[in-house]
Amino acid sequence: MSTGYSYTVIRVQPDQETHIGVSIYPDALAEVKYFPAKQNSHAFISITHGVADVTIGTTNTTEVTDEHITFARQLLDAAAAFLADCERLHAEQQAAA
Image 1 (cartoon, rainbow, N blue to C red):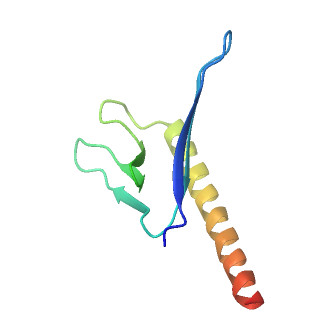
Image 2: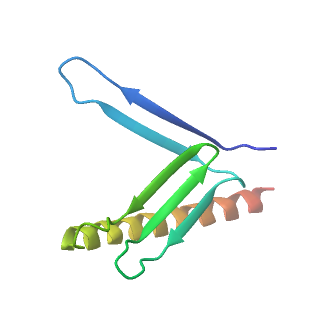
């Protein structure tokens, strides 16, 4: 049984900037893939769940900057913290079962 779901919210309000949010609550059908940079190309990560796709990457027409490196480090830190929380919650749930 699938317990995951994904959704997109587009919020448009007068006199405010439009906001688009993509939420992914994964299950076994979710995939995260890394596509390494090749010569004269760009690197990117793809997150797929159902028909929702999120791609994070550099572009092949832009020089990689300090901002790209800072963003990649923030992504790594957030993913590591997410993993630690998932592992902790899983262990707590297993101990309670």
